[in-house]
Image 1 (tube, rainbow, N blue to C red):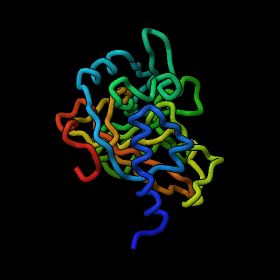
Image 2: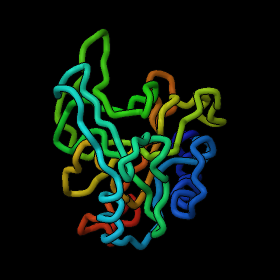
Image 3: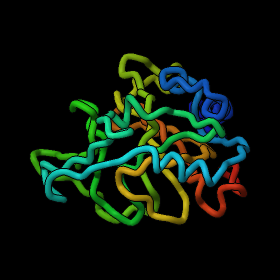
Image 4: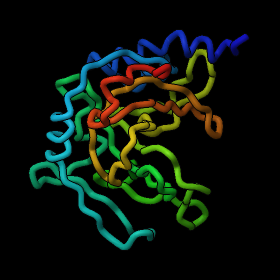
Length: 219
């Protein structure tokens, strides 16, 4: 039999994806409602090109290094990828900030504690962090979301991890670090990492050739 927490999460999953689709996503509410499931959506590959062209990113510092950063701009104005890039697009897709491209291992992340929240490489004990292997997906975050560290999930009894909601993008192409791409959510699952709740949205790029055929985790 399924663990009660897992069963509750699965039952609630459609609510999360529906909120993403319908423009009603709120990260605090998602922490109460999310898990793994999907909903069909029509996607427009032209929209993917439009979103990518709207924003620019600039790398500063040597890579890899403690000083390396990727900063973002819109129409020449510096912006935060977390706070200023919209969550939704008109066609129902969700924007995805790629922090770690597919087939790479440097543990990059949006620096939520720095001005303009650029992308940087995570550190531990004064050293740059890497995964032990290249990951097989694009990894990043959804702008304008946040997992509340003061909110306890009613079933899992853990708090949010104080970060944006993460995305595992499963398309065929490696997306550039710092790129902003429309994606179609197809599922979501919960992890407990060091005692904190850490949601992962499974999504596929709207530009992927199979995006129109993949609508949920079963696909």
